[in-house]
Image 1 (cartoon, rainbow, N blue to C red):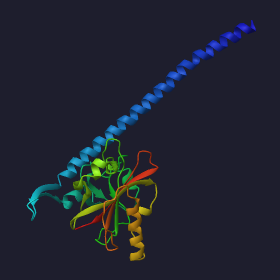
Image 2 (image 1 turned 60 degrees about the vertical axis):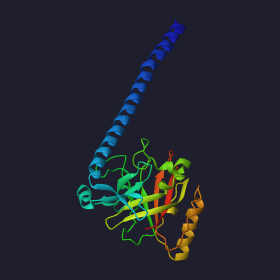
Image 3 (image 1 turned 90 degrees about the horizontal axis):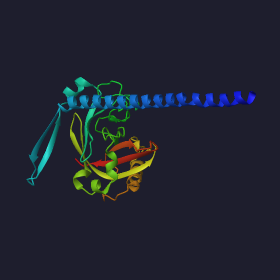
Image 4 (image 1 turned 180 degrees about the vertical axis):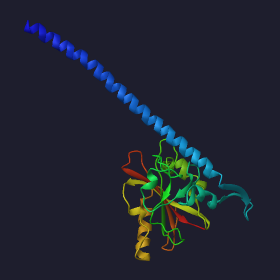
Amino acid sequence: MAKTIGKHSKKETKTRKIPIFRLISIVIILACGIYIWNWVKENNHSNEVMQIAKEAVTVKKENNEEDESKEVITVDFEKLKKTNPDVVGWIIVNNTNIDYPVVQTSDNSFYLSHSLDKEYNAAGWPFADYRVANNGKDKNITIYGHNRKDGSMFGSLKKILQPEWYENKDNLKITYVTEEETNEYQVFSVYQIAKETYYTNNYFNSDEEYQSFLNELQSRSEVDFDVELKSSDKILTLSTCADNNYYRVVLHAKLIN
């Protein structure tokens, strides 16, 4: 009799496991569904905000002395600041999706999880390091952005490590527009590196220290761009996470006008 009861108990236990397994599967599916729904919702919101921001930008073509056509970008910062007074610039990297207004606040965390309109959004928004003075005297202007899987924000920055990107000379001029001026930067270094803060430094005790800093950044590059660097140079740094969040994809460019 006892043996019979034992056999029934095993069958009952096995039967009970099936609904539990199904329940776990349902929970996982629901969680994935909620994640995807939030991801799409946040992306749609970012796109909507960006469409409004683009209304502040005018692009027209002008011919230079060599009679070559060049796009001239004008940004209405007064209009942009009505959306968010934290806007400090507009960054454009050719043949990537990077064409965004840049914001800045008193820390490097707020815009990791907030959109241009300051609404919570895991996509974040491209932002300048809080230590940047934006007074024309910065040695190193660092701008961060998330590596979004759909290529938005700084998700397309990883293209800089591909030959088809850096072998195109038109891609090596980075445009950064501020309220005071439109600046062009020449790329001199691109690389991937383990997470660190060294390359974001913007204060140096001497010209020698700064020159050493520039030399180090240039030596890290996966490509030799043959750009001369001097202690009088000012640079722009773009940074995003690599796909595993342990590494960073980094670009450095020096001011050329």
